[in-house]
Length: 265
Image 1: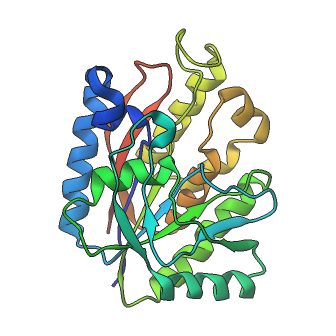
Image 2: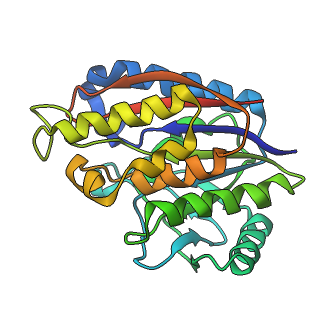
Image 3: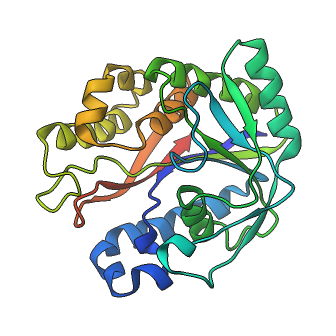
């Protein structure tokens, strides 16, 4: 059945009720859009969800996949000691990814950690409540490999997904620029605003290869933690007939929060 769903989601911990509390009201559009995307994901009935997160164990010289017998969410770092959920790995698909990356001479490392990073946990908690049997592939980009290499990695992922008999969804857990407002953590930058506009333009124009125009200097100035996550997703989408639905984009906390569904033809 191959690829049945793709999208871009936020991973802000503010979405979690025990963490965001009253601040959730500030990102109401994002919350509503995440709920809608969750409904769309449920309708697609995926067996496996590949979640690409910029946080967790990020290696300098390889993309990594977390392979463990089970995964637990944990939000202790945000003061939430009660929200706990568990998922299981898509072991066979992870093994096929490993073999494919070796064949294409692409850098992939397997790591093992029972606890998922918040970039993976936040969207999983939000989106899989009605998908209790879904298995997951937690993936992380490299901290030093180029945009082009991550794009090629996305293309390799699609090659294996296309040959799978499982129904597979791929989500990029990607907060955009952290420099899009006066209240941004690192201050306002025109490059930050331009970065977020570029991502949305790529989605509207159905032009994944356009992300290759984004260089390291732009990424650094924009303060985006998720550029390489997006590079993987856009590599995956390159050559696929698709339509993008931007459910919402807002920046009330100085960070660009984008939620988008990729409708596959």
